[in-house]
Length: 312
Image (cartoon, rainbow, N blue to C red):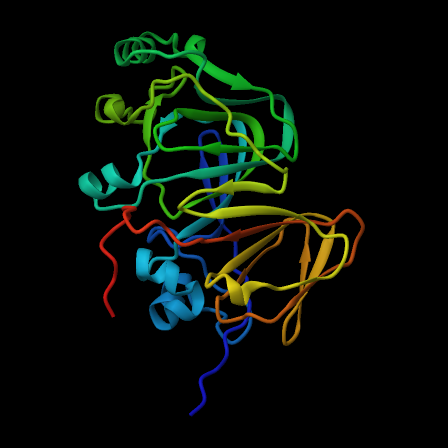
């Protein structure tokens, strides 16, 4: 019996409320959040079930070798109405060794900004662990933080070890498939647990240095994911067969159609997962000034650490 060919996948949003606002998970395989396909012959199946059944046909052999049966990338929207807690994410190695989990690298794409929008991204200057600890304890940590007033369309890479928080802003977050983080300070609130002692040796105490962006279209090239900005002015033929990777397309402006065996409309805000098996398609703009983000996984270095490669 001939196997059914996989098709592009859409997922139902999963919205979670927090003291600072809400998070809308769009593509997530986290256990406590498991995105459900919303249409097509796989509609009603969760992402984890789809991966368990179709493995490298969905993610590609590169991702399967490193991440096994967990989908390697997380996509969510953050609607920060107040100010999120100051926290830090571990890298892959300490996360693996201490918590049997993935670390977290993230890219923040700024969608909209309120009048008080700020992003807190690391330190103004090099600090010591003692300075950080004392400032978090006595409420003066904001004086040490590097902050920026963001603008829509800007991107910020949040690396493991980098303390960070957001205020009055809507962000699209593309990240490694993990929500492992440690809260250092909650701006005076006593409602949630603080993990300062547990996290102190995970923090990078060097001054923040914004990563260089060479051409404006390559937004992130990390071992965990690669993100390109695509100004879609003309039809674009897929090069997916050369990538051995799933592709995720996120429409950030305008509208488009992904033409595979049938058309898949993408309007602003839509997210579409293209399995690695789907290698022949066109991207067609249907509106002026259409922009897409393309997410994929490039091969990781042989000595890079996520977990032991999965054996078939």
